[in-house]
Image 1 (cartoon, rainbow, N blue to C red):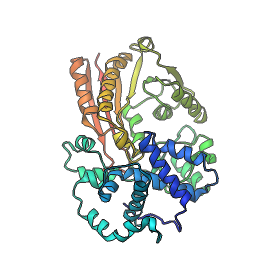
Image 2: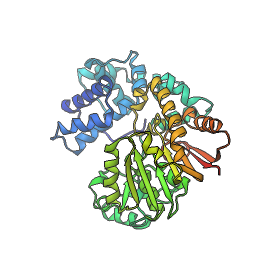
Image 3: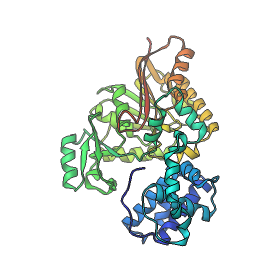
Image 4: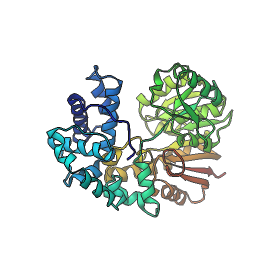
Length: 409
């Protein structure tokens, strides 16, 4: 782990907040971002440094959960005394100070032994904290697995996508600079910018004006992969809150039509708000209420985006607790969902049209194998044009898979 800025004092209420969050994340199976959000709402007196301390500590403990228990020499437990020890171990491996306090004495006195134990770890799944079954899937046919495991266990950068309907990337960089934000362009995509400091972008005037959306640089490569053009009719069949929908609208210069669909109404409501802020007016939102919704659109789309539900293994840097909440049975269920979407939603694409199948997964079963099985089932109806697996080790980006497929005439 990289050395971070230290805090001058460990206040009991802040450490207690960290412990409370860990208990909820692992004891009640709630995702870390939701737990921290609730914790901050119930502790309104915490200042910015306090919140940063709690959030960073929680995420780093979750990120390194297996390693910390390995160093403790114990099986994971949610007993408070044990969790305080885990917190102390986290401070040690992060090279952060612990006060001379009886509560931390066992760990402080064994600091050299702990550091030596870390040095001798050879298994990537322990060193970078992956469950054994998930490490087996991710490491399959990957001699570079140790490098990938290390990268997936690092915090992700903060990326935004320029809304080219309203500004250019160069102009946006100047605007951000005037707001006191250090930023730089991403080299691998035309719209991407990395913010070099942690900031609540949603409060900035530039965000309120719709000049950008928060979107990982790797995710910004998916819409261009489909090559949307002005005047086309495109269906985004798993649109969610619409990050890629809005990107396609910008690439189409607001001309043509995008039908953004999803099975969850609350996500589509968020898409409507984002579209209004982005000045996007070529998007029609439709809730998928059953097979009839799909049948009404048979053979009507020039292009189709299927950004399907997946395990999220490509975005572990942003959601480290996915490692511990993901179960083998969910993995099997998501494979079935992907197959069903491919077999039914593709009927909306007209002959001669193109589609992109995309995931934020690094698991071959969800990606290359899923696409190949679809092509085998359809027996000549579709042709794979090209595919790409984006790895976090290649670019400073999350991991994504994308396949461009043509529906034969």
